[in-house]
Length: 130
Image 1: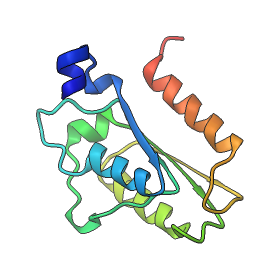
Image 2: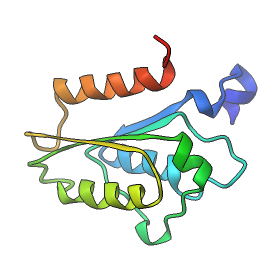
Image 3: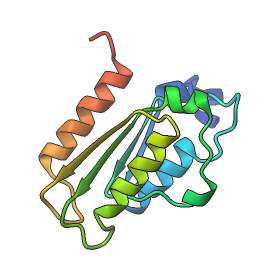
C-alpha cells in the first residue's frame, strides 16, 4: 500500500517472491484471502517453498486470473520435501491459478537454470511487449 501511495507503484506491477519460508510467505501474500477489490499482484515466485494454511485457502477469481505463479523446487530437497511442490501446485491450479512449476536435480538450494527460468517468467510479466 505504501509503495502505491508514496511511489505510485501499483501492486499490478509487483511480483512477490521468496525462497523456502520466504516462498511460503509470498504464496500467502499473493493468494490467501486477498479480498475482492484489492488490486492483484503481477505475479508470484516460490522457490523451494510450501503452501501454508491449505485448508483455509481462498483465491478470488480476479486474483487467480491476474497473478500467475512460478514455483521451482529441488527434487532432492530434504528441508522442504519435494512433494510439497506438487501438493501446493495442485491446490492452486484447482483454484484457477496459472502455475508454471519446474523441478531441478538439487537439494534445498537454487541454481542457475532455476534462476534463469524465474527471470524469464518475471520479464514476461513485467515487460510483455518486449
